[in-house]
Length: 120
Image (cartoon, rainbow, N blue to C red; front, side, top):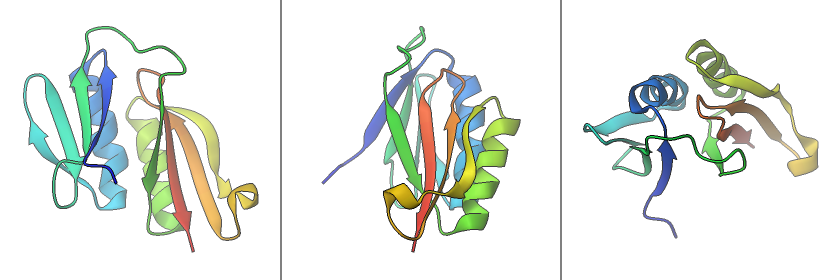
């Protein structure tokens, strides 16, 4: 259904460090870099981070990234915290979202909500 998703950020270099770190444990890599944008994906540019020059509003968006299992959720959450993100929900079971749901929540350097989720 989607070709790609984009988020606008205030500081591209800072956000790229965060998204590089969170993406790595998920098997996702940066596939494009320019002075105005970075893009991530597995087979192509699916997630775009574009410099806006000012911070987005606090409820601007929510991004959910798929993980292969609990270890990947835990690693992505830890990497995000180590690279400028803040905790918005520690890794753990989320039975309210279905049996076999395990997720963690972060805020990226601009305050955008990032979920890392595994389902089985």
